[in-house]
Length: 284
Image 1 (cartoon, rainbow, N blue to C red):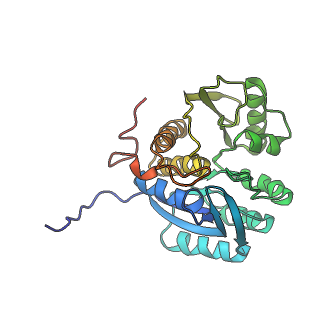
Image 2 (spheres, helix red, strand yellow):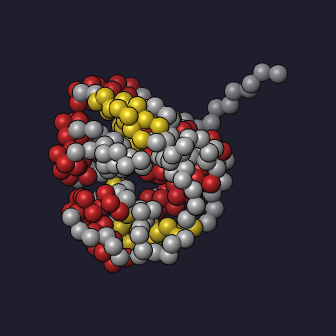
């Protein structure tokens, strides 16, 4: 018996601008897995090629800003996109070029301001981080973890109040939503909980809470979450609902990690079961 073709509605098109992870745990490899599992169509503009695995980053080869934009043009000019996810950019020229290319683009943009890999390797220098400001000005959502939030604002993030204040400052400054991820929280939340805060430009906030998964297999969590939000926005979900569902997907991928690697191993995207349309298979 052969496979029978079906003709559902077209999937949301998601363009990922990010670096490659040779071990498949993070970067565009995690993005493609996430987008595909959530019913989207993934495209990529690769910013850098890394040699890395669960123990760290062994090497990085950056691509030129002009070639990154050429990849974006190839995708946007032919296939088009419903959402863009931005991850590791690698240099300030690439950051500026990506911001310039997307300045007149009207779709959803989700930016994960990658600075340090899960293993601790630096993936953005001070000049690149400074260049994030122009990119955040055109984003729908920025998804910093707490160390990234501190670096972007220069503010402490050691209490629930200070985390909110830093996120609200960033959201107001760039007129975008900020999802302050609590995975690195060292004490403002209970040790067995992870609290993420979605802060709007007007200062309103919605908190999301789930139990902390006791695992070392966390490689690619930020990539997965941001790509999931972008895909769900491409499906037409409202932002707060997209964040809620994306967190559920990320939690399920953590729970189903295959156990590969001797360090911070990859997540189990392939084990997460979703329905034929975004949102099915995930419930509050």
